[in-house]
Amino acid sequence: MTWIILLIGVAVGAFSGVIGLGGGILFVPALVWLLGMDQHRAQGTSLGALLAPVGLLAFLEYYRNGNADIRVAALLAVGFSVGGYFGAAWAQHVPDLWLRRIFALTLLVIAAKLLWNHA
Image (tube, rainbow, N blue to C red; front, side):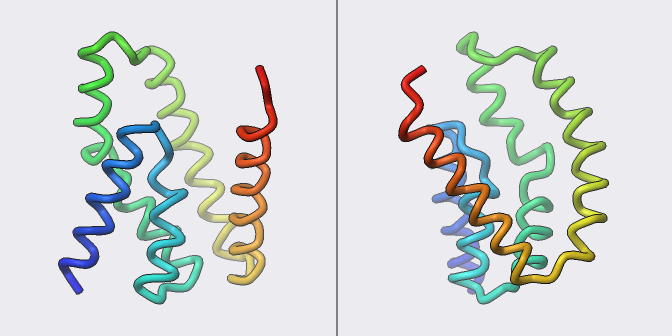
């Protein structure tokens, strides 16, 4: 089981590094489908995996190549910290089925926007 978890991490990390995709978009479904976690546990585990040290090496590579804005990243991190706290507190009161539906709907909206937006 440890090797499967490590392989999921490597695959999600590589894919995220290539296209800048948030790891949670891939981690959460993988944890639900491959490890049998419920939605709450998968989301909490994903957030734990994505703490600062994980993204640091990928960020440094982008920064070294002039492809990262530290000021914007820092402001996003502050906002994400505050929003993440309150969002996580709220999510604890949402039934698992509805949390999964909200997650899926969010992915569908983002996918549709990316597929059909020509801007």
